[in-house]
Amino acid sequence: MTSVDLMRLIPLLLLSPLFAFAQAPLPAAQADPLLPTASEAVPLEDIRRFVEVFRTVQSVYVDPIDDRTLMQASVRALLADLDPHSAYLAATSANELRDDVQGMYDGIGVEVEVRPDRSLKIIGAVDGSPAQKAGLRTGDVIVAIDGRPVGATRQDDPSRALRGAAGTAVRLSLLRPGESLPRDITLVRQSIALASVSARLLEPGFGYVRISYFEGDTADELRRALARLKVQAGGPLSGLVLDLRNNPGGLLTTAIETADAFLDGGMIVSTRGRTPAANTLYRAGPGDALAGAPMVLLIDVGTASSAEVVAGALRDQRRALLLGARSFGKGSVQTVIDLGNGDALKLTTARYYTPSGRSIQAAGILPDVILPGTTIRGLREQDLPLHLRGDEEVTDAYANGVIVEGEAAILEALRRVKQAAGVRLSARRAG
Image 1 (tube, rainbow, N blue to C red):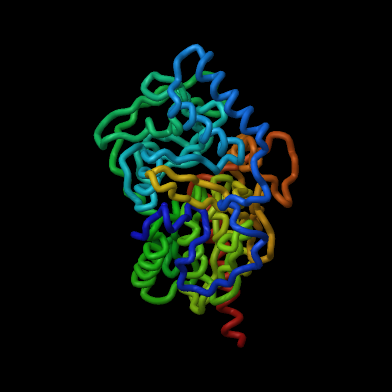
Image 2 (cartoon, rainbow, N blue to C red):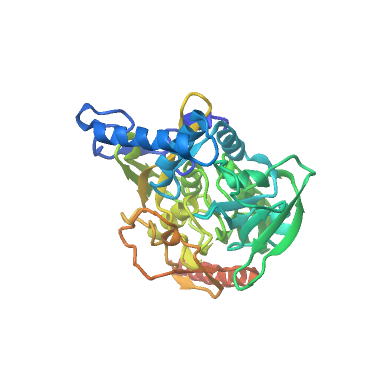
């Protein structure tokens, strides 16, 4: 999560003008909402109320608060009530975000979501990281770091305490679904290199590629991995299993390039928002890296965001069979906007749509074949407070998310891709 300046590139899950493949703007809904409009002035009464509350807190609150701290809190609150993915990023957080996009940082290698009580729910662990090796898994909730309750201070991002110099230790207290008492675990931080693609041959001619995250050079990594597999196979692959389980997303740019690698033209995704830049169509260029060889794609509740873009494109284009469990359901795009002083806004600016024109926001993608897994409550987009309402969202109280783990799913995917390859070979011979 290229060497392009991130704060100008704007995509954590976003739309970028930096693509080699075809794209065409959709009609814009209205003028840029980031620019003030004379016709919608803030009512003077509201301004007075804000100043009154500001001064009252400043003068009456139990502990003294300086103007800068109180103003920063006001700005953070302005974004906190929008949706779970919009946030004000102080300079330190914005810099950490740049590091993430470049694919390197020091920490324990875990993707987290800040919950309303400021605890940290684990979305996924980076392959080979201290967090993964220690057994941290999706659904675990970090409630204390080094003996201090998470979110005990006013810092804007409680997850920052997980980072630190490589070689230093951090003690976590975490709650695991189904357990009544927290467990303590000590991890040693290390430099996390986000090698987002791993690959191997499952059987002669049949490859397996896992993408754990979409960062700057994921698409290049994918192309190199496919080239290695072809060398190992002694020729073109007969089929491929693409594993996007527990992939929390990342850069939309690289997700689109990834989908493009397996498509010989056609729509990949479209985005729709209020600004001209937010209304865009992304199409695949000619050339399929597998030359039409069958694919099976694995997903589960940990498959989110950009990973859902890839899954939606390959399924709608009938390029891959989807196995696993319903995906997370994050169908929105965030733009990172540099404020000039080092701080930044991460702002939701668009929804994205699969080639069939469907928004997966708060609904997710249902696979073609359901696989068994571990059911955990509260892991989906629709469970997040203040989430954007989805076009196909179904209110089902506290939704269940299913994590599909282990090699059994890969073996089932291999069985099905071999079956499809056999049908394809028979059709060629008959023709």
